[in-house]
Every structure is written in C-alpha cells, then in structure tokens.
Image 1 (cartoon, rainbow, N blue to C red):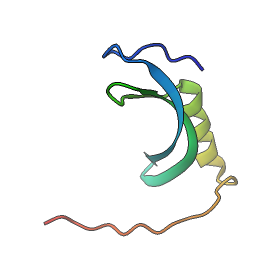
Image 2: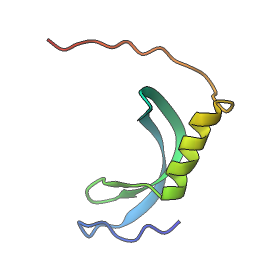
Image 3: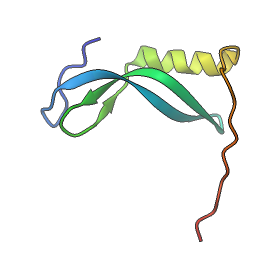
Image 4: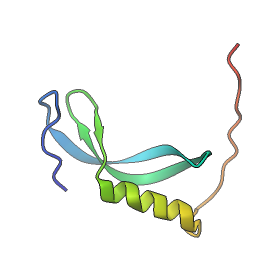
Length: 76
C-alpha cells in the first residue's frame, strides 16, 4: 500500500504492529496490523479499509485467538 509522505516531510513505510483499541467500552488488542509509519516522527497512518476490518473482526468475535486479563490501577 502507498502512504505518501508525512506532514513532517518524512517517508512513510508500511509496518506490521500490535494495536490496542477501545471499541464500545471494551479493550481489544490486534496483532500483525498493517499501518504506515513515518520514519522521521513516528506518526501512524491507518488505511480506512484496515480500520473497517478491525471493527468487523470485533463484531464477529469468532477470530479471537485468546483473551487476557488486564489489571486496572488508579494512580493516586
């Protein structure tokens, strides 16, 4: 996929990342997500089709590989 150049002028290269996202109050972690990453500033650029697919995966829930428990701590 082509991503063009970043606002900072840096080159954007596609990488595969681990992506954590909240959806309807729940936290989800995705592995191997394609995203454009600026080699200068680190800005991430997601294609719309990728975000749409993530939402479909959440809704179906049949592709879940595993579930993890995450402790939540209030910083006082």
